[in-house]
Length: 279
Image (cartoon, rainbow, N blue to C red):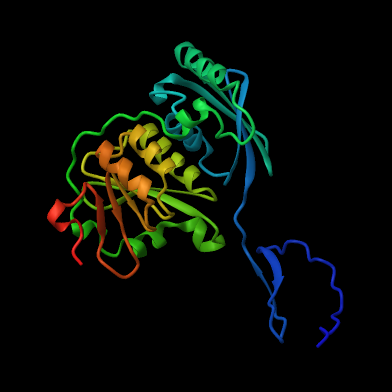
């Protein structure tokens, strides 16, 4: 049966309280919603362009610090001497000044990657970037189970940007008393964790006895960032990948999955062999 013709309506401009939309229902109700902002951020180190990232334009200084640390560009944020962010709207630029030692190491890294081709994961050097050597974390206790009680609800209460616009991941830090100390949000799950890492370092938040939480799936890249930042326990609201569990056990990162409707699942450290699987 042919579809009925509909009258053409020109697109509506953004409403004062958001973007207008029409419901795909017989009543075709028109309403408006606030949508999250996104921008392209070009990052340069000591005048050399390094990367362009799509990010949410909030807490950008935290993002730069966390990205620089978790990507292995600096070992400590003390190597970052200055961050200057310019631009507005959909295009921003971050000029980062590094110490001479950190900049020399970055140039050596870029020189090694210069010969790689195509997809960005081709060649020995690129694989070493994807599967880098990481330090083993010191042994640390798991958080008390009660610190995970109602955690999903508590996270929703502090995700202020997501409540109004949606489409945002969050990374949070829960302190040794079980209180949410920091929450950072972004369209990118990696970016949210970088922002949290940057904030932890910049604000010198005591991490002992605390843990980080990500609202997204937990893949290997997030593990890289957590281990490099010295985070000893990572909780994810979505299940981790098998490779992430393997690496978490290898590097002594406590890894916990918090399902929607069942008890928290501790994947790392590994359970005793006799309890690892019971049919």
